[in-house]
Length: 294
Image (cartoon, rainbow, N blue to C red; front, top):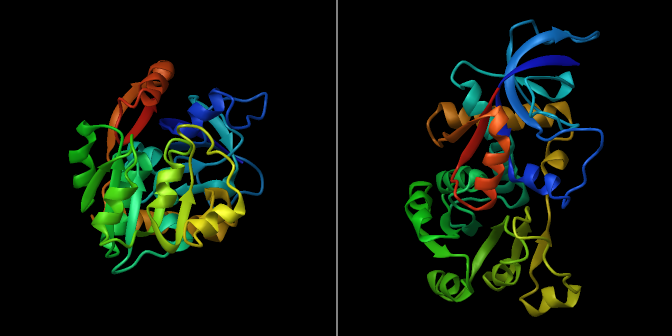
């Protein structure tokens, strides 16, 4: 183990879902998986870190909403000089999620046509930029008009509203074909429209439930929609080994340092104001990444 003295703690929508009882929490425990800081103490049989190293950690059990915590050394990554603590804390889950979504779950490349929900949100901000860098046509979906400009800045070629049936507009934007893949982090409210936005044999990637779990889908329904595929990927399965974790983190660091994508902190709160951060996140008043400062 390492003991980390936190300098910045991430707020993710996952934290809201755990607090609301929609995701399983292991008790006793706290909130938060993701934080950056400095190594304050080193446990036995740990040789890859030194006191004072700047690190970021994405690891359970939850409890990152704290000034200090113990973390598994195997889930910690040293920070390069070009990445600030606040930036690192805010982007690791989001950025590594975006990385596996565009590089592995569906391999985005030149000519790909994709739909990204919450295109002005934490994951969406990075995912849209990364997909655009890879050569995709990116359609962003947002929940309010004031997020259109942010989605455009993130690389979206087109932006649609996610509050109503957007599938017809998406079909028109793709010359009647539909998109190759939909990245849906909203869940219940958008699931059916996302499915209708796909081309034949397209892929619906459901990786979040901001509006709740979608209704059950009979397998036959996937055939009726054009023999589409459905998956629900998760970051732990794509960073299962130490090697996968480090490779994923290094890919993200390289994209940030090179300037190909940006991952700026859009709002900061004092650690004691975590309830306010949650309230504003739930009310969709925020865009991009949020951090708590101990």
